[in-house]
Image 1 (spheres, rainbow, N blue to C red):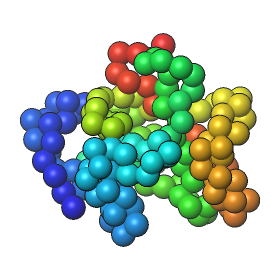
Image 2 (cartoon, rainbow, N blue to C red):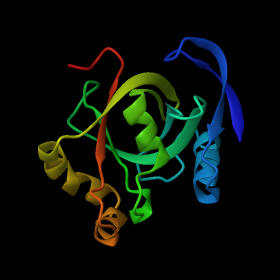
Image 3 (cartoon, rainbow, N blue to C red):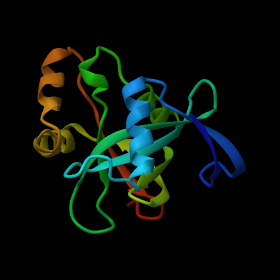
Amino acid sequence: MTSPVRDTVHDSVHDTVRDNPTPWVADHIRRFEETGGHPRPGTDDLLLTTRGRKSGQLRRTALVYVRDGEGDRAPYVLTASNGGGDRHPAWYLNLLADPEVVLQVGSDTFTATARPATAAESARLWPAVVAAMPSYAAYRTATTREIPLVLVSPAGLTD
């Protein structure tokens, strides 16, 4: 699925966003849109749009998040689990190449800046992400790679 959007991060008036082609993720994105950003009651989900590191195209995926603290300044914490696969998800590699992203949380859409969590931040935050999505614990044991956590701060709120 594709949709035209105003991409304020990259200063283009219109660009086409390409949704994650994995069927269950594409279905999750569809449910997110149909429910005004609340596809799974009791679970905090968001849509992340990154710029493809190879194609330059906008790519959108659905992810679970937690917050690192309280209030508007608290970064969103994303887990680059890739279902416990041995490779990092494409969205993670994309934001390493271009950390300027777009988040949609509920009905709010805004630009943000992403960065990998430090080892100390990951150790502190890992229990919170497992509490939000218990399957992350199993994913962590299913792979030999370190599953990165990503901190995403709304534009203008980074330190």
